[in-house]
Image 1 (cartoon, helix red, strand yellow):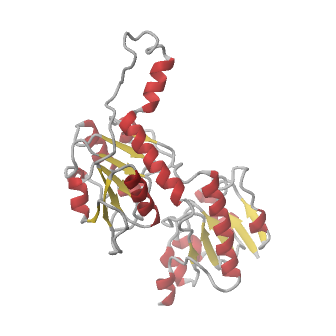
Image 2: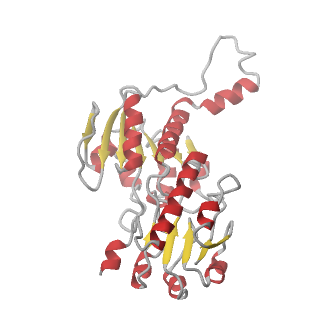
Image 3: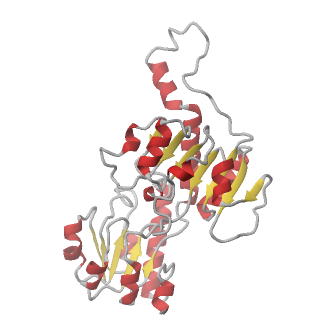
Length: 324
């Protein structure tokens, strides 16, 4: 069985071996694959592994030996799952591998927005503390979390873990989700509509998948509902946000700040307005990338491919389409 990995570098830059996957077949790993090379590199593959490389309908239709698409991520918007279903090809994703890593990173972004640790470190090393007439100083307001409200849009594994961490900091938690779930066992928790969350929360963090229905749903109208001292955090998908509207909201003081680990086009383009927006932190999509999380991802990727080999594909995101 031929297995082709189209963009393996982020999963294994050298510290997360492919050996377990190689036990399942003849594995060919490409660190990165440009769009024009996808078809040639995928020829003859029974299983294709992709993280962000796009597999569109035309490509899928041109690969007669393809039988399974294994997405080495939770999000699968890089694959045309309908086109795959038409060919009877299961598309398998990997939920839950980075729950702790991403939730921790959400809190890291929030801490940086509330304390601006980096600029204080740089200030001290530039000699400002040495020459200061007082024993302490601060270059930005220092903001406590206790008593504030964390608003969570999407309360799956990551969203609920963020809720637990926020609760540990003494925050109230409000959550909005597509499907009603049992109330978590924590004080100061409430389910709310998305509009209520945006109106009442001090921090709003996004943990929903990207769909055709919610693309750029974070727009000027919704941002205007937020408190002027509130912050927005996005570690989910960049295209959930209308970036021009968010930049305008930051630059005009509609909201206090934003912490973003994702943008609409990655790598980020030099003309992205968020790069120059006020009080906006942008990191290069690293919330998921702890070694522990990547080890989990490799283990679960191998499990998904093995399940396909055994005739029982798991985590099939186009299962309903396949059943039609």
